[in-house]
Length: 320
Image (tube, rainbow, N blue to C red; front, side, top):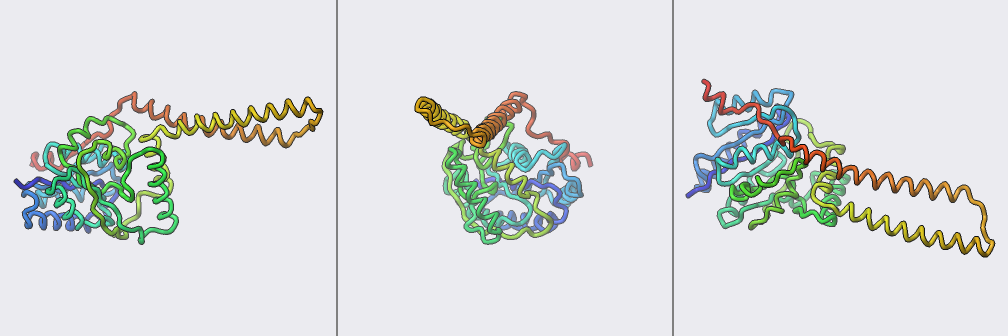
């Protein structure tokens, strides 16, 4: 029996790029169906993440013209990770496999062929991994690669050079639904579920149209959120650093006592100020890291919904 595929595509202010990439996604689904790899019930699911432009109107028009297209709209902008999660949970009970991909045309759509083949060979999760970063600037390439290496050193299990282009089976999604975190970092959470997985490598292209919604500020925020959401190693590092500083301070106290006994003391204002400023800065940094974890606990305890769907294209079609 051929599996039903839902392509899950988060969108935020994509009125410029959506008319270009939507037909490409449809062409890919038609090709997979023609090759008898997926069923005729397969769909393209757009998630409008509270866009302020005409993105939702475009999605609605696509759904009216072709039943392969469908869409949901969040009540407000919740961020890329929440939008992807909303799409996965929406598709969970309607399909056998999902493939999440951005709608900007940067990820190679043709890699879906190999993803579906890997699923048919028994893999439950297939990660889309960039084979190179030739299209990135030196700064972005260096920071991105450093980020993945740093995450792994922090104890977070992530796939190197993988973002959110992946195939997930409904079996995995059923288990993934049991993860109730409010602070989402999907590329680190999916490997935690387990099951047989593999990777498919592809070349990433330049954005087709529009502007990137991930400037440096958002990239740094995502990186920090990923580290603090998946690992408590920063807290362990603080403890280790505190013990090291305490040991050095103890040696300093011994040195001061010995110097006082032998009468070799010199009043030093500059040295005292340096030590005070250094220790004060270290304490503030440590308190900031601890505060970040406390803030995450605060948000988790509240148990607020991770997404709220305000509209569905299916509802509009049924009302007609």
